[in-house]
Image (cartoon, rainbow, N blue to C red; front, side, top):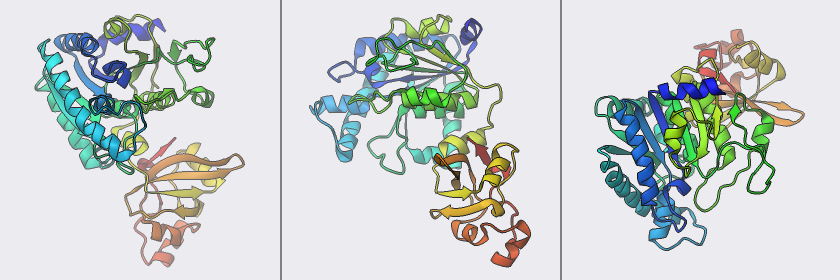
Length: 379
């Protein structure tokens, strides 16, 4: 789509995600010449007055190389140790290389905790905005793998980049890795697979075909890129998926050259708080609803009332984020996420009852809705 490509030069705030195989060489060490090539292009953007955030992978791979544990799988403690060693190497290289082009950088390490707590979420946004606007610094973000574990793990830097782009109201997200774009099959296994240059809608068929090609160098793959693309679309952020080792890849994308796959965002844009509910917060439980409640939520944009709830799973407090699901012939399907007005114990006591009967069961009636529509996002 030529019109969309031509708009990229006007993007003022850009998030650039660099995959492990872009940042590191085949043997696992930081690929200094190629990182310098990318840094020069990014510095040109900042010199042109644009605000750029870099989300980098490569710490674990660099640490594996430094510890000489390149050829075996790692358990969680070993991954954390490799990350701790590799992060120092990675950021030292970033600072030295970007400094050649007169560009200052800042290191920001994140876990899911910074994305899940709304106050931390806002503090992070303020920090990044200050670095970008007041000091013209390029923040370099990475998951803090040395301490990340189940419950605080973001998972893939594709997702982190999309969340950050959403959080900062970025205009453009560049996902640069070892794939040339979105294909209608896995090009590594299917030579006939064709590149799709423009994506305007992510269908279930596309998600099914998105092959997860992650290996030792990274945890992502086309599946995670499709998930991050969906997030970017909801946030109104244009996304380009391209091969990070293409010569002058950033310059060419910004010139509007047809390289990789461009993902066109939706016209409507989720408010920041709803983006946090949908993508950043960690679910604490699940609420099962009947078909009538599911239709009211999805088709009519209604709040979730206790009468439509058939089961409450997990333990959570009032104000926690929960998923909303419905049981169908094809299996359980998550249809929404939202902030519960009640804790799990009280919600079980009022499930299936009408709003006017809440006081009879609880002794008080603070809310009519289990989840108000202002605190609910349909997926």
